[in-house]
Length: 395
Image 1 (cartoon, rainbow, N blue to C red):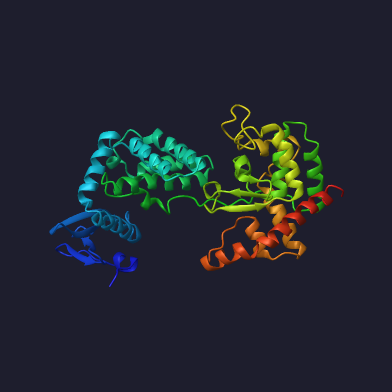
Image 2 (image 1 turned 180 degrees about the horizontal axis):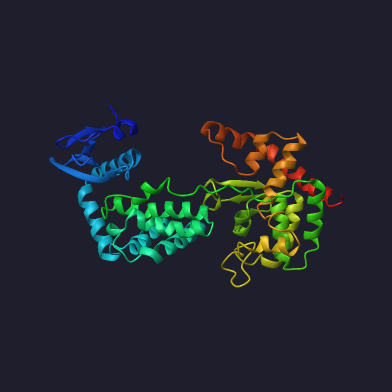
């Protein structure tokens, strides 16, 4: 019978080591010291072989099963998974060495090959820079939980509680990568889960009063900075998409004939393709923008290089320039403006509004159903919202 996490946690050490099976050759070896090690027994061309995956709970039950599946996939190709692991281990040792910094570089390269977004890669680089400053040059086997905690405490002292939690998670990812590569046996960040101050969630400021929103729109219309920045703010308002999705939008994603914007999964927070209906007001803004940046890749290229999108600070900085503090309105706040007024109108199915915001439905069946069911309503909702914004300008 397959194992469960509860069973594994309740396994007690004995005088002699013993095995407890999961299935398909996977089992956990309980040592007298209390450590619990994942191992896989298999046959390769008739000979019994053994493959180790690391210690529980650094390697979870789900991870161990995934590693088992990967090993069996290699066997199906007549590749010995033990040899493949040793070869990978040798390659890592030769190319990167065993320090945290070099293993972190290998982990980030793995993320890049997996197609992670630039934002994710940049965050990984930032977090690893913080960790490397403290122990990047140390062999990963010598890094302890107290060492890691010192790095995290430095962020807490500054009041950066969210950063401290994300940094712990990122360091843990590097350790788990090292465990899977056979370069260390445990992930010390696991012991720090309850050691940090829990961050207080702060909602992004947003204007939801119709009259105040109309006033903001008039201010944006009169913005005397870069024309692209003005158009960016207006597109935020009318599309209700995330600022990052606006900044990274590319011209080949816009279908003017069908009046839709198709955002690929790699750019979406929830990693799912998202299609945005474009009302006439949006098309007019895009036509204006096309006269300025239409020869490039991005709708909103950086002023320094057209090969990169505008800075993530540009849109919020424009709101500050218009006199709106961070406690009054943020670039992300236009989504809350849309959500609040659309829901308060009582005209639209709440699921249509959620779909417009690209909020992912957790139920897979309902998710697939909603994508098709609410498209026509979302088109009408987009037209309605654009008209509402036009009306609010007159208040």
